[in-house]
Length: 311
Image 1 (cartoon, one colour):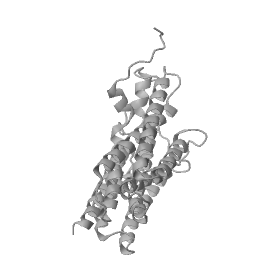
Image 2 (cartoon, helix red, strand yellow):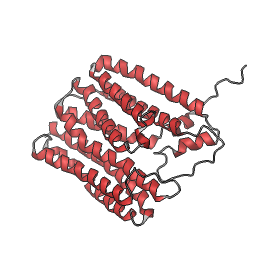
Image 3 (cartoon, one colour):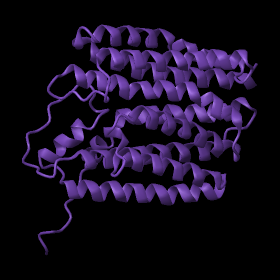
Image 4 (cartoon, one colour):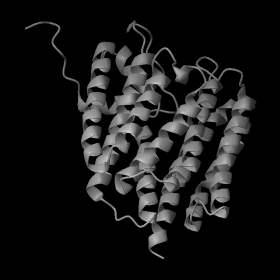
């Protein structure tokens, strides 16, 4: 038998490469999309909801793997990356698997493309049931993933991470709503904005954490610690301003204000981002609170939207 035979890759390795903690953000985005449709009176299609949730998380996992592959050193003899505060959210754990020889760069590429291909087939199958608009959303997601991780754009390495993140999770909410509603509608597009802005603050806080370590820091071009704090503050304030303004303008139902439950977490993250500009050891906690705020915001807003049809 050829020595080039494919090695068996354990499920634990696949799980680590998928960056499971980061998939929670996609799951919450799906719940928000389902709730947006339910709040408009659409009965929940449980089979469609489960299929959309698995599809979105699988696609996210494939993109995470492709991102790790593009970051991976082609010389696997390089030193093992150290653990960081953001594991298993970031790419460090996957890069460590490569440098330790658990998986090769070629095997990672093959695994990522195989999973992405499987998700594409599953997405087309779901689109047959839900409607052709799901194909458009999927193509937009693929375009964003390619522009983020792959040449020639590689927006993730050029300061475009926050924009890509906001658009990506805005699309996830729209897609989850579309699976229930079977058509595009303005309400989920509006509902998704505050969540997408808080999601965009996560990679920004992540950059602040990386910049706190002078040996691995990679702040956005032109932004120092205070610039990161200012941009993070702007994103989070804009998110809550959009939510409150949307209720006042009657774009959101009043129950959407349950999303304000996450405000104390965002306020703490803002304070720590500014504190980290002077005392970098606070940056990891700023990132943790930013993640928690996005998750709590999406879940609490979803819960509020569900009550629209109950009361």
